[in-house]
Image (cartoon, rainbow, N blue to C red):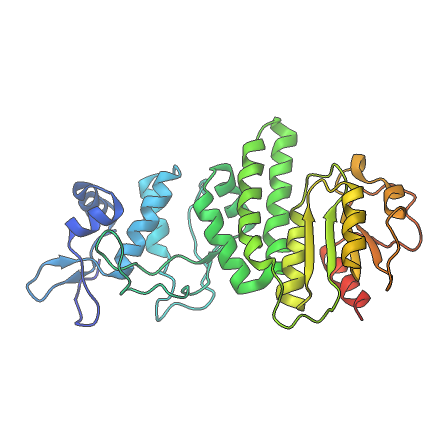
Length: 338
């Protein structure tokens, strides 16, 4: 590893401080350096070897990969090919090549998404060291699915947050969330297992979306959009994603009633709010009874009722459009608001 003198404006850290920061014994850190070349890249003016912020990032990433079951040699190759997020000479979208083992992205699977706000090498941490540049990667569905299978909530949260920040709700939903759910469902169909995988992934997706489900500044609509799941329909993530996309990308205010909304409750909310649009989601055929939608109370001005999702059975009235895609839902709701 290239050893450069520690500059005055970039601190260097001894092996003891780094070991305490990572919770990794100092002899293990020395082994990683001698065997794999993952070690300190700086020397102090007195000749002592020192870790800089980029070295800390590589060590944290290597430690994380090893904890997910990646062999140490493969983890080392991964981090040595990667670049710390926020590095001055790192391209905005640098592909990262790796071995293709579980937990390690294959060639071209990862791109840097830059540095997050508020995190800098000068921030204090309980370990007494500055926070190293955080990892903000935009994963592929395969990477995210592997983390879901490993029940790696931390990685899922970081990746989802980075994708939402960089690309927005629609891109993240269509390019990451849906493909991962499809992979999880395929695994369930093949093995009869992986329920816990679905639950962990669903929990992290919802946690990432909820901060975005709030009234936007200066909303374009005076009357809210009412979003609900059909009675007994438990799959509620699509309506939370829709609410987040409406707020952040269209400045449309909504109200979310959530999963398993009794039609009596939906009717009560419709009377109380007089929403511009009532959007009801059904994913399973057992919950998609068209007759229930026709019983919603009339309001003045009238509410436009829409049925979303694949669960709706035949028999929807001609006045109630059947929305079959995320983008179609956004377009129809926006159009209904004029």
